[in-house]
Image (cartoon, rainbow, N blue to C red; front, side, top):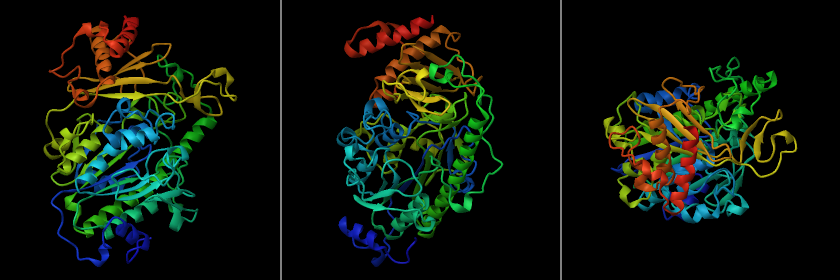
Length: 542
């Protein structure tokens, strides 16, 4: 699918945006502003070895750049996380709370209030060619979201998957026009199609402007369909048997406690098979990365291009006896890989700096020379860390999620009551309408903590010391120092109501932090109501 001359569809698109077909033009001098490529995988964990199959990716990006070891998402679910990546904002500010239209996933409200201000739109306004290929938001292309004729503002070239991840038998919106794909591996396998479209863009784009590419692969999301040549890979691999595998989630939220322990042999066989298939799909992603970087190198553009490799959320396979999914507050779901190489980035480096997916937009805009003061993003640019390996940095981030579910009973699992969703045949459910929580995730010189509150009738709180308990087996909410508990409770209130620069205020373990205990008891309209409600949660633990 890599053409020796410009494919007709690409020339037509180039003419549509006012450019001549570049294959007919001489190559211009490279732009002084760097190019940027963002490769976004779907459901790729880092805590359970998800990077293991990606040997070429690690060699081509990590070995030539920097690996962040404390990279997290603001919400452990596809659509809210992708909305945070695009907008640079936490879910409570971009209002995409889950994967449904009702949860604002690709809704008309999102399109009107957020899409015009995403970082790709701002890049485009500052002179960048912008290219998208792959999965956008889970409800993209739905009739209620404007169908596939909708092309978000700011994209020069648009090849977006209709709805959720697939590998065959899907539809792409090619600059607003539908193109259907079948089940012939050589021309239809989505990861390879994305690779080939991306290579075509590199070959036939304008050479007079810098470019931004966002390539969003389906892998390793279900249905885990591997390319034929990889279907026999990893036959002896099973899901990791960590200390939190197939154990009861005692002292945790009711949704975790309802999982059946020990899991049945059938459930374990299912999740082991899913784990293998996930790895198999990643081998095609590894090929995509290799092809892309080789092409950049051949064109003489690699040295002036930043490459980011990450995921929208993590994943679990049997942890706390939950079969497979994401959505939960634990490390395996909220922690993601983040590899970066580019001009000025030293090779084979690691950083413990606490970064989040809301930082991708500000960082890429900073690379482009865009004035971040002209944005309303919650995140921070970590370009100084990429180039210098240091600088003043945050000590905490917010993680938040609003559960999916409706107020009716699943007929196959009546004993669980109303509101559960994502249920397996043995009535172990991965989500519920009141699986709604917010957490402060703290990483500082002396502390590695997570403090979480659930918005439910239990007023449930979970706290973990990740230094002593990396697999989050023991909830220390009732034993942690009361002063720390009080400060974390206060900090969570601040982050849940933050916007823009206030989201970057000093955390509990930052020397600049100021704690006013009376803040929890002041009544200041809606904000005061929120504080008093959350104070009740804290007081119930004392």
